[in-house]
Image 1 (cartoon, one colour):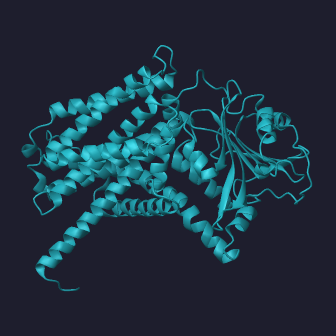
Image 2 (cartoon, rainbow, N blue to C red):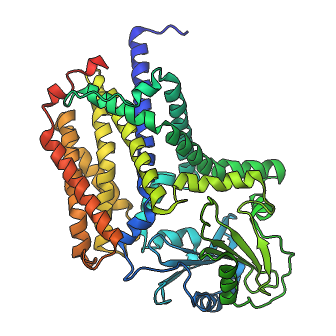
Length: 517
């Protein structure tokens, strides 16, 4: 062990603690936004609902609409076509190709169209670089921002994926070490002492929630790290070892349908006929569509179907695009069924919790909320215990700022989106709100600042249903059940934060037992 002067050792221990809290707060951001993103579709429907419910993602007559989009744009964009329902139920159709930019880097350029599934009318169509097209897409800007915050922490390129992957491994380590250090695992699952508003009660709640949540935290961390590192590190690493660093080649080998290359021109077969055949074969509806080489003899049409009852993974049906011939069921990864492909396919339903409809989403949301609570409560207990140490009072304030400021800033972003559903960038209102909420921390003590943040969050949540209705959203008697339930949840959560503020005891009493921890 390195012997250091007492003051130096103390400073290093403090720095170690600061870094631990910072890492924990970043992990909290990822967990909370991921928990909300479980209901991405429901939140998008609440924020920007269609005038009536949609029976199927791919309604009858969508084939000619897609053909019209292809015919009026550059034929090169038919190289790769993806059609999928956006979170709010509207269909997104991306026609694009791969080109080389002026600086020599490969970029994707094409057309992104937004189709109303009820009227089959193209309500928006833009041409440009694919990354910019999705950033400019406004119908689901609120949920897109939420997902981007969860996946990349708003960082550019692969940096966000790398950071969230590291946080996933940190959560994985916390789950494993949490299991190991629990000497009384089963006792801790049921120990919740009633001591008013003492820190011991908060500690018991933290331990109970963390103990019950250990298996879920492990699974969530593992699958999240898989998604973050899979694209940022895993695929380039495999390409480097097996394909001389050519990522495009490995992508083609693993994901491209095994159809012999034939670049001669040929019209695409009737899409409606292909869709009908897929429905008849499976008895299920389409959920996604991929077309490669539209307008060529080697075109392929691949469809994702609904997940059959009793299964975790959906079927992917493959057709020859020029003739409409059914080629078989294609695995989600690779050209032949494999254990590795099935395991990789399981990562998505296990991470997003969408394998059993609303029921599994509610369960995943509950466990995700518990994970966020465990993270935030642990940080609060840790910082409150050390508030007398130099600098730690600011860490306690930072914990409150992130813990309550994150959902409050997201609520303001929702207000901005509800006021103008064509706004595409919510970064500015999110950051400005976070900055404004930080200012009171300069004037009041840590406990009063925490109470201020809770009240601010409660008020913002209470305003969301009113803002939605005032800005043209349907009233409860005309709205879908999804809109009514989410409005009710905002009101319930907002009222709970305000009610908890009234019940909160004096801050000196609240933390009088901190040293007992």
